[in-house]
Amino acid sequence: MIPETRRRLRDSWGFCERHAWGGLAVEMAFRHRFLLGQTILYADLMERCLDAFNLQGPWQARRLAGRLVGDGHCMMCDMNAYGAGRGYARPALIEQGRRTDDLRTLAMETSSHWRKAVCAVCEGHSGAARCRRHLLEDIARNCRIALGRHRNALQQTHEHLLAYERSFVWGFRDTDRPEDRAALFNAIGWFSGWRPLLALMDETPSSF
Ligand SMILES: [Zn+2]
Ligand SMILES: [Zn+2]
Image 1: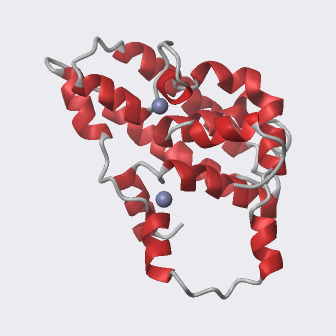
Image 2: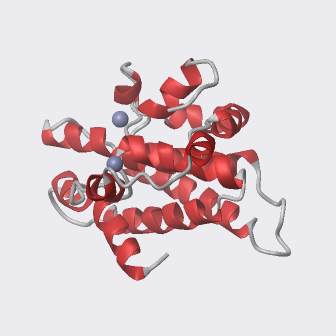
């Protein structure tokens, strides 16, 4: 990944909800399970996110919010606005890129490892799990926040992402476990929100 792209993705904590999950679906439509690029990206973002949780002293939740808010831009939204109307891609290629079967299959295989991390607000119930955006909303409303619990969950996700990343290295092939693959879902859900994945799991196989 070129440094400018990486910097922009760090500033925005990844993509908007639709493009984060759509991007993973497109990767899987073309590369199946060779998800090294996505894994490197989210391991990097998660490492920086854990740094953001490293706080001492007063007003920790407020200070964390300042670090986690991001610049609000989605690189893909910006690129689409810029490139609108430049329809060079062939229809068959576009159709393949819209396929979500592989993403749905991987999500079903690993669901026992990501289900408990799903943000309760994204899903519409009263549980304690939060995505980044809904944690920020809680902080803005002065809700009581268990920062240590969120940090521990993210730390685990980071460790599984590193194990998943290593499994793409020659000599470590096929060492990844379902919980390592599920960490990609946990990371995307945390940074961008869960609703597109939840919608995908609720419907019959189709496309975004
Ligand atoms: Zn977007
Ligand atoms: Zn949420």
